Image (cartoon, rainbow, N blue to C red):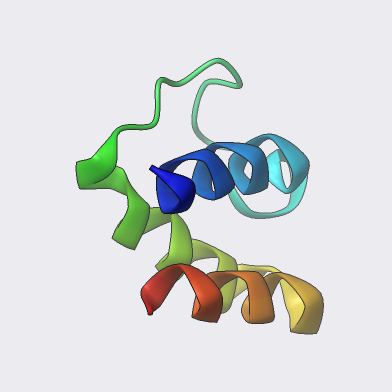
Length: 57
């Protein structure tokens, strides 16, 4: 549950930078955590990369 909460928070925080092509109110589920982490690490810069890496653990 912690990973899900962190993924939802990261999605909102980095929406403009990493998830701009998705709706801002997208409901992130457990199946989406890996996708959020991948997008953070690919498009977000160092700080977002670190958040994505923590989500992958």
